[in-house]
Image 1 (cartoon, one colour):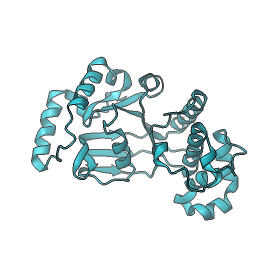
Image 2 (cartoon, one colour; image 1 turned 135 degrees about the vertical axis):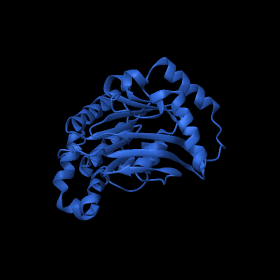
Image 3 (cartoon, one colour; image 1 turned 135 degrees about the horizontal axis):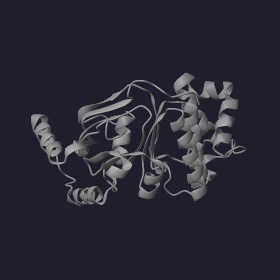
Image 4 (cartoon, one colour; image 1 turned 90 degrees about the horizontal axis):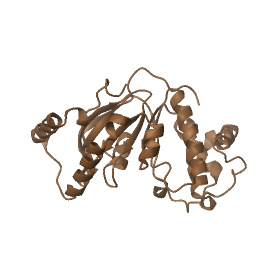
Length: 271
């Protein structure tokens, strides 16, 4: 992969509310994903992590506010969102990463060597002809990472990349993520394992349908912040409507005043 360094921050969130059928799944989010960030999204199930990644990837529209993107992004959804019964080979799946540049199938014919190299880089040399439905969970995740290699984007979004896979695969994929980060790429990953986040991700956004804290991981993953996230998640009203117009701004301003930098990503905090 070529260098992903850039000057402009790749993603900016402005008064962002995302959700489904006009019910917010995440709301009142402001902040900047900076160039070269290695950022973990953390929160309980239903906290809005996957929704936020889908919004960043352009998969769902904003209910309110906006997402400003200055770079192309590569997005890997949760593995269980991908239909593995579709008759694709491992080579075909990885080769889809070439779609953005010239159309997947034309590129696959011309660049078979590049696809094979990407598969070898994730430990799947010799798996090219295997149907994806025959892969183990770890092998399938490796194939998805090969697809990301071929997308060659400067911003990479990962939704639960390590869930349900073996420790060796987790370790190998973490090495690949660190390599991308060393190249200057920006990586945002939704994760559950807090020990893993503390060990490998220098910045964290803690969510509970709204931002609890965003900044250096050690400052974000405090017992106080985690307790607040748990309490907010338990109190959330699934049927709540989206806040509207000036009332949303007023509520957001009040919330920000109450907990200082928790609702915003301050550059000096995340250095």
